[in-house]
Picture 1 (cartoon, rainbow, N blue to C red):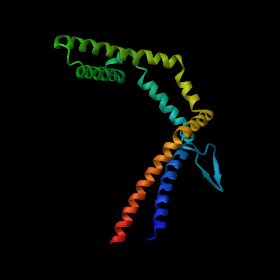
Picture 2: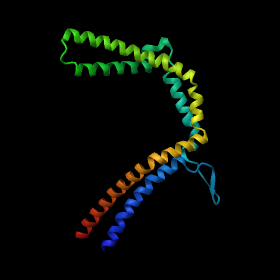
Picture 3: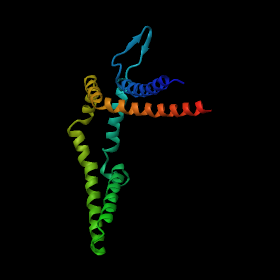
Length: 190
């Protein structure tokens, strides 16, 4: 096989990887409006198509996860989260406080465990729900997913994500090009 065809195959694989990953990026945001290709209607971008479902999922998350009654503390997700945080803090202190005497270390650890647990409980069960109510988070989420803001998000995503997506696609294509080249060498020898 001539060398120019091998080089052409190599670069076509890289180009395929770049276009594949960039087309995924375009599928998320484009087209913004309903368009038709001759007679066939084209679907809108994924963000525009599922905008209401995304807003519903986010607001349901806030209502189910953060708004917990005081009576349900022991069985709530907030309580589990607070226990996890306090356990991780205790583990961190155990690993890093090896020089302390054991009688002092156990008291410090139990004190830290209680303080961190109650702090995390207050944060997740009273402070965050009050902040959600005070700053009207649900309305701001709905406002975030309005058409003008999605265009703004798309511009920022293009600015910050286009280069990494193209690089990742190029590396993906390069890996497939090398794989094709290895297979070409193996089959040309046989």
